[in-house]
Image (cartoon, rainbow, N blue to C red; front, side):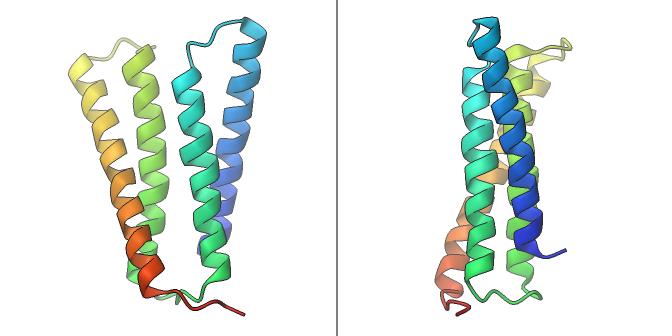
Length: 130
C-alpha cells in the first residue's frame, strides 16, 4: 500500500475517534477527555493527513527507507502518545503508574522522532511531483 494512502486511512480513523470523543464529551457534559481528544485530532488526524499530503505532493521514492521509517514511527508514535495519555490520565484498568508513564513517554518520544524524520525528508525531497 502506498505511504500516502496508509497515512490517509490512519488519519481518517483518528478523525472518527476524535469526533466521537468530542460528541461523547458534549453529550455527557464532562470534558475529562479534552486533552486526549485534542491530541487525537491534532496528532492523529491533522498530522497524519499532512504527512499523507506531503507524500502525495512530493517525489519521495517508494524505496526510501527513511520515508518508511518516518511513516511507521508516525503511526506507532501517534498510537503510543494518545493511548499512553489516556492510560496515564484516566488509568481505566488500574495499571501501575510507572508503566503508564513509561508507555506515555515512549509513545511521545517515538512521535518526536517521526517529526524529526519529517523535517529531514522535507529538506531531502523537495521536488514536486508535477
